[in-house]
Image (cartoon, rainbow, N blue to C red):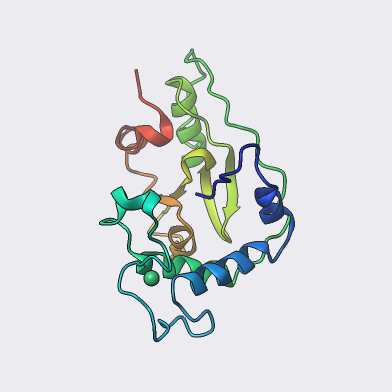
Length: 198
Ligand SMILES: [Zn+2]
């Protein structure tokens, strides 16, 4: 989480958003502050162990000194060092939650996605923002961006193995679900994604 300490902001967040190398520059300086060589990722010769008054400790954060460990930030900062900020596509509209109500019976021949959607509608649960979409280059069946969660229906008999690692590595909760398993079990196990069945 990045916050601006100045009341009303000093324009920093806007620069992070608008300049493709702003976060990279900040990551580089942050690494130097915590005694790490940005080129090698290694500690500098005068590095402290967890934190010192040259890097992260101040009198203002004395109450947190036991918790502060500069080493925990290094992997994240090294990743940000290689980042480029690009304009994204407009965000998806938020999923609409429809009130529960009578719905037409779903035919046996419906796809796993159609059955899942019908179940969510019938129980007044959260609807996905997208279906049959692609996230992090991986084809997925249901996308819940607010919860950073996706459902991939995997028919282990027929479909070749899909590599779900790009989703996991980018912080998505992945639910790889055999379509023959009861969808209600998946829903019940993840109320933060689907909402709760009342
Ligand atoms: Zn230090």
